[in-house]
Image (cartoon, rainbow, N blue to C red; front, side, top):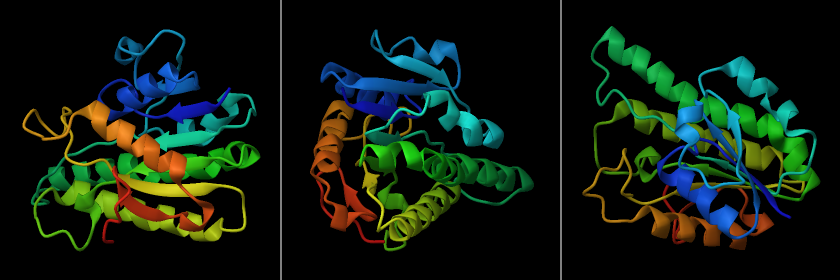
Length: 221
């Protein structure tokens, strides 16, 4: 049985990843911040409490997985705050967003490497087109900066691990109908996740570190 870890699986895209992989018979390990957030997860999914702000907990988390190989790590948990950085409070929000969106998934990737490597597996991080320097829209400074940092960090990991049996991918899910994307977003969650799963499944080793959308189309850095 294949094994997948999905962070931020209590709602939205993370929840849908957990649902779809569970429906296909994968062993799913889903992280949430509190037990209440796990209520929507399918029966049989293993729930682990994990706060992306807790760096000590993140560093120790791989030990909780029992040393068993991990076929896929989906770094989904994310946060959006501070449209502009104009006050000290905005700056504090920026630090929090950076920690959750960039530092946490990179720290987890480093810790989970032996488990994913043992399975010859894959790591996929949920980035965003808004993290692209080439993107032409503005605002949401903290979120954009955090995703650009995530892209740079995971690209560096992919280059550093190119001789190891693990493949990394950065994914733009599209503008999705989630709490963050809003009800006016054009893309249903199930469609976005199904597309990303196809891209992950088709990923080749030589493409490790690529930045693509849910259809597999390249996104400009």
